[in-house]
Image (cartoon, rainbow, N blue to C red; front, side, top):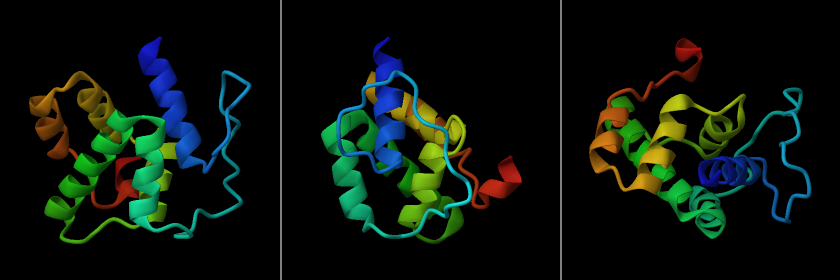
Length: 122
């Protein structure tokens, strides 16, 4: 149950929701509205930290792995998309769960699975 609430909080943060949610399921993502870099990455991570610190920690590990594997920094819009599309990027969600559990080995293993082009993984 705790993990389900954590995932719901992460999805809410990814969608830019800043108020309490009254429903148990997130609203469907409107794919016609593009996610833009309308928020600095540091602000987005700070928002995640307020909602669920393991979400921020997992996202930071994901960003670091992306930087190491892909040779560039991930944009805020890319991270938001990885959080919110469908059930979220499985590697990112795994890193958040591993952060919640304090599993540094799991985070390192998942870091090897980060893809540079998310369209190639789908």
